[in-house]
Image 1 (cartoon, rainbow, N blue to C red):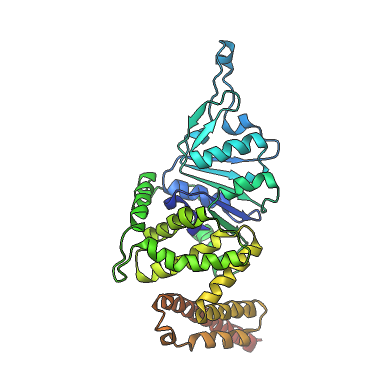
Image 2 (tube, rainbow, N blue to C red):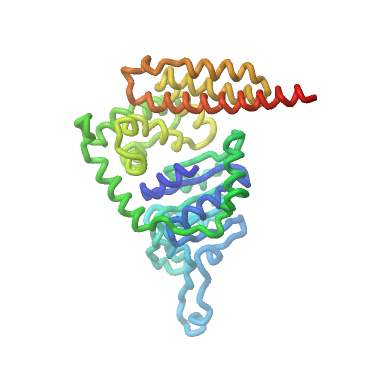
Length: 361
């Protein structure tokens, strides 16, 4: 979720988080806004929210003078806008959000007067994927879609507990570490990256993107996942270049970025599974390692510790020289092996503690 939000900001695109309540969607966006000292606007939509609540009411004083003027809300002055339950918007709000996201302009529904908005990135949140036909145009405006689940990994839960209660990270006293000007500079840098040549490959990034991304995107189309030409030519290259701007223009990142950003295309969890299958087929042996790690984690939860240790051992005995002809996969394989080693260490520590406990009985 955090990576998606960072990529949306650098690419100047919009992102939607879909998941159950209590998964820190609004907390994450608000925290990042504070870290960037960005102008932030947040609103929770309901089916009863009217245009004036979200965008601002009519100036009654001016109206008494025979003048029609609206007191625009901070939505037109914010860098980052967060709209919770965004798909509950009514038709009047829906039309205005479309122009806000696409043109960065809001039109007054009474006069048609255009108001230029400051908006850089709009973040939406919803508990579910929109099914209504009238909401599909709005959903399509989100170039990045993330399905957020509750934490299940014990290590991640422990880290979250430590950050909240040991370090007191509740988001209240956050000091900025950068600014929106930095984001804008990084965005410009990302756009330049697209036409720059990668050292060691001799080709501009957009051509490397074409070689890596297009076959995968065509595979998705063959599976029924709709990927428009606009997405392939306009949206995805910006996100791809933003990934490189954030994480570095290394050979590994240039070759692997597409695997990290492809899942953001999914419109629902079924499509997400299709995309993961396409990626898995492309990654081959490394995908098998990742599956073994997930199996080991499931076995730990099921208290099948010996089975989990066996799976972790299989990962740790993997010879990375087997993928010498695919150097861009090596970092991914090494990361999985490192995680497996950490899980094994913690599991062995836990088993020793249990053994001592049993001896003391």
